[in-house]
Length: 64
Image (cartoon, rainbow, N blue to C red; front, side, top):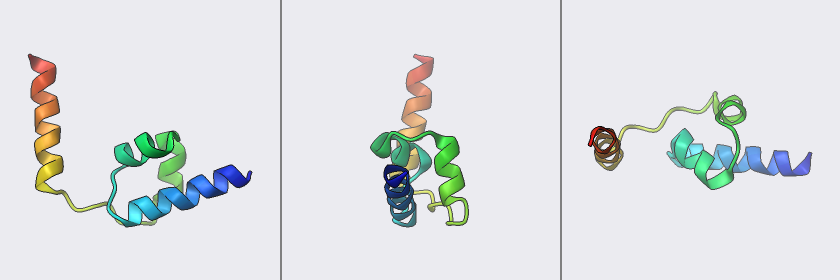
């Protein structure tokens, strides 16, 4: 139970720092479902140019 509490606190810190669900999931290895319940009261990060470029690159790479 302690490990889950530590993961929850880490997820909340990362989300408060502006990290996305995908970034938090990659770092902590928890399910998006659990994570979304833990951080649902925190605001979503503002879109950044870097994230938008990365997302666009991923979409175009999938079509190649």
